[in-house]
Length: 158
Picture 1: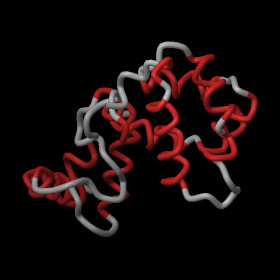
Picture 2: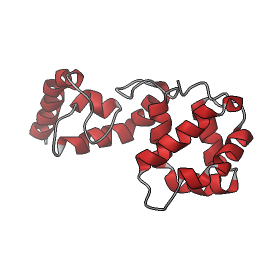
Picture 3: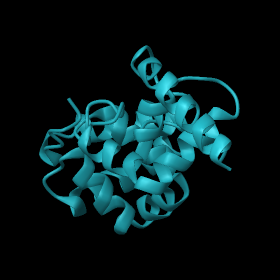
C-alpha cells in the first residue's frame, strides 16, 4: 500500500510542471487539469476525479481560474452553458421563461431575464431549426440573438 501511495505521489509531483505546458485534457479544466495537464489516457480519470472531489471545475468556470478561461463573463463560457443545458434550454426558450433562461441571462450579463426569454422565444425556429442541429450552431444562434438586441444589454458577451 505504501508503494502505491508513493507511486501516486511521485506521479503527481513529476507531472505537475507539465500542467502549465498546454491546454487541459479530456477531463476539462479545473484543479485536475493543473495537476495532470493534457496527458492522454487513463490519467484523465484522475484529473476528472480531482475536479469532482474538490468541485474545482465549477468554481474555475465561474471565476475564470484553474485553466478555465476568461470567467463567467465570456461568450465561450456562455456557449458551454448552452451546450451543457441544451434540452432544458430548448424547453425554456419555447415557453419564453424558466430557470435555465434566467441562468443564461445572468451568465451573459443581460439586464432583464424576461426580455431575454421573449427575444429567444421569437427566434426559436432559427435557434433550433431541427432536433439534429449541432450544438455549435445552437450556441452561435443564441449568442447572436442576445448580441443583436441592444435592449437586452447582454454586456458580458463581448
